[in-house]
Image (cartoon, rainbow, N blue to C red; front, side, top):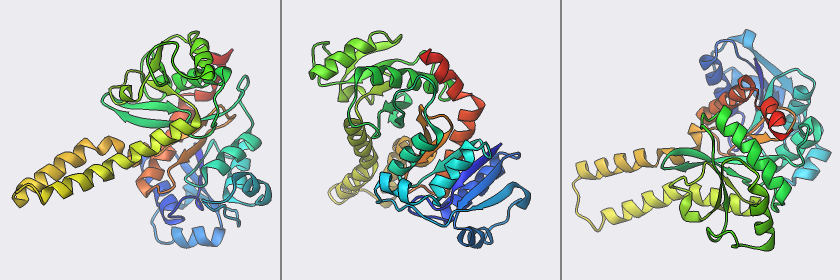
Length: 327
């Protein structure tokens, strides 16, 4: 299996992408990695590591798309970027997947334009893992489509069910629609139309509220990209906020140092599911290929887990199952 890695993506390139790729090769003995980005920069970073040189390749891509650049203009004007060239290699069959912690908007735009859409898919979507009391569940859409239409919601739900079942191992995944109340008549006219459309989905449990996410009343939470992204970013802020609140309380409650360390250990363990490193990244569901996006601040272990996500998608034939579910 050959995976192309964006060596110029994320906040800590090329160090973390290169180290993450090497960690992945240690976990998968037959895996080959193509690092895509400015060649001199990549080779300088590779010189810091020991690795099987027969399994590592470098593809020069001299242009870099910044994290804050406009996605549309970046894809249009930087034809020699790591994202554009990496996805082009995937399209040409030179690798089985492309993974990147770079500009999410640019990666989605380039993935849609270069790889195209799967048969029957109207719009690709970004799903995100969200921690619950039952383990990780899926939040869809997490920022790709700020507006949601009924036919899009149905496709998103079906694609998410395929991913949840094939990759996450969730049997008969349940689908819930994020809303302001559980009753069928709640929400805007569009939300009501989406609710009616989702009734055709096997496993649809109806409307769910914000308080239903952590108890995992559903396995897949359908919403528009604006609400989804806000919920996702709020979830990411919880661990740091709780740590600060607990540390602030230490000054008010008289605890011995040993007791404080025990509290910190318990809190860290409890909040470990919020650590994005454990997940790495997720595919753009609906594109005709395997394009994995990760957090901009991805560490080397997170990059390794992004590559693992790509391997899982390939081995489970996620795209073949998605096409079958839509037909």
